[in-house]
Length: 200
Image 1 (cartoon, rainbow, N blue to C red):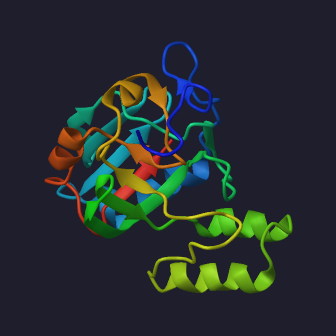
Image 2 (image 1 turned 60 degrees about the vertical axis):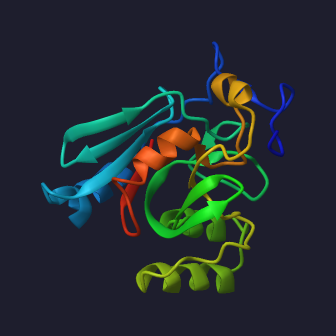
């Protein structure tokens, strides 16, 4: 069993889903004007948290859909904080890939975004120095700091040696999107470093 997977801490799939959060048009516009979604040949990923699905997209065409994905065990949020076990909504890109991990495969996202960091700075969740570090990293297409009060190491990963039954019935992760090992293997054929991921 993976750490944090339990009936007490997990959000049950049957009936109770992560608390819906309105999808901001800022993210929609970012996706529309991104080179990744404007190209008919570009592949991108859409995570629908309400349906617990992950879709592989090319332009507006759905190529493949993975059902029953697991999300953060404490729901979803536009503004994640370290340790809150919530999946952050937003528009990201895959920044790094690990093929030999306890989760089988891991596709790391370039969380947090500039708007997320700005909001945290204006609310004194992070200081100005941290905000500028994140801003500089994002502007230079580097991975933002992962050790701030906003948390980090958010990504898409497999189940590894975890319990398939728990995965099938609970949202159990610390904020990531989890698929079965078979699903993540299949997904790896479509995505790579730089692939855009929209979590809504």
